Structures are given as C-alpha cells and as structure tokens.
Length: 208
Image 1 (cartoon, rainbow, N blue to C red):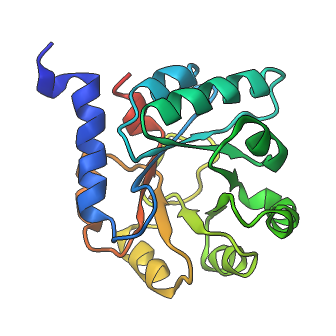
Image 2: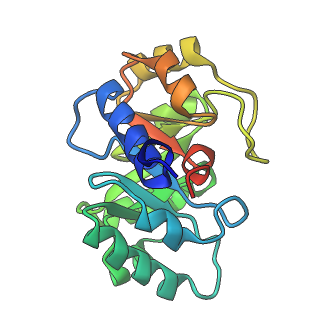
Image 3: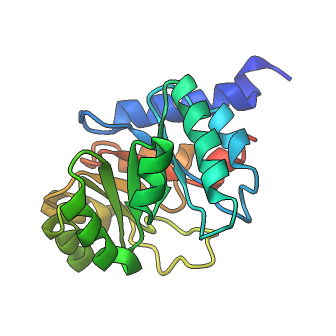
C-alpha cells in the first residue's frame, strides 16, 4: 500500500484539511467520535489520531467503560491527542479525560456538571439554532452542529446544509464544529464558514 493511500496518511490529511479550514481557536480542529456499530474498536481510532486532534468516546453506559476510557486516555495522551467522554463527568475525572461531550438530551445533566467543574472542556451536541443558544447559556465551551450533510447515522435528521450552517455559525456565541457527512470532498464546501473545526465518524472509520 502506498503512503498516500495508507490509513495513517489519510487521517493526517483530514486533520490537515480541518486545520486549514477551521478558524483559529485554541482547541482541536478535528474531533473523531466513536460508535459501537460503525467503530467497534475505539483503540484502533485512538492509535491513528493525529497529534492535536481529539477522540470523543461515546460509551452508552457499557459495563467496561471505565477500563476502556482509561486505556483510551493513556493512548490519546501518548499521541499528543485529547480525549472526551460522553455524558459522564465522574468518568472523565476518574480516568483523566480532557473533557466531556453532552448529547442534546443530556443538557440538564450538563448544566449540573458545569456548576461543579470549570476546568473540563465541555462540548454539546446541537441540531438547531435554539439548541446552540441553550448550549451557550449553559456555559458549554463548544457545540457540535449536525447533521450538516446527509449522514449514515441512524439518528440523523434532515441535513442542515452548507448555507444554513454558515448562518448558524455566525449567530452562535460558541465555537461550532460541523458534524454529519463530513469527509474530504464536503469539507471543501464549507471553507471559510467560520467553523472551529470538524467532527466525524464515518470518514475517519474509512481509514481503519
């Protein structure tokens, strides 16, 4: 396999493109989300993360989440990458994660966690302008807006589209990451959108 088509090279190409397109903020430009179906081995994803990117471990309450999250934290940090865990500040604190990602349905828990922790980096899922406004009011540090383009996620709704995404980014008080159908070709359609960066599952999974 040639270097340019290798999984390692492709993952770094995605990170490089996100770096060029994303606005300058002191945060990762590329977020990679785990999925129990589409990315059943999160260690494989973590082992290929470019330095400066972040892995979002979505555990969905599995019994071995503490062990898995601990291993992911060590692997991410060895690679110079960050780790966020989903919906669980206690888990994040215990294993030394860099932050917590909050799905929209857990905004109430996110507000309670924010009141207890101002050191963790909190991101929030958002699917609309009202959700972006609420995430900002709750003190989140960034939002993952989705789905921007058509996505294979079973939970994805109608695509927001590039034009609407640009408007929502301009209106948002938070840095916004774009998620949903994000890959090489679609990232170029949202150049200079004002996005803080990009989040993906499927495109990064194609490299592993």
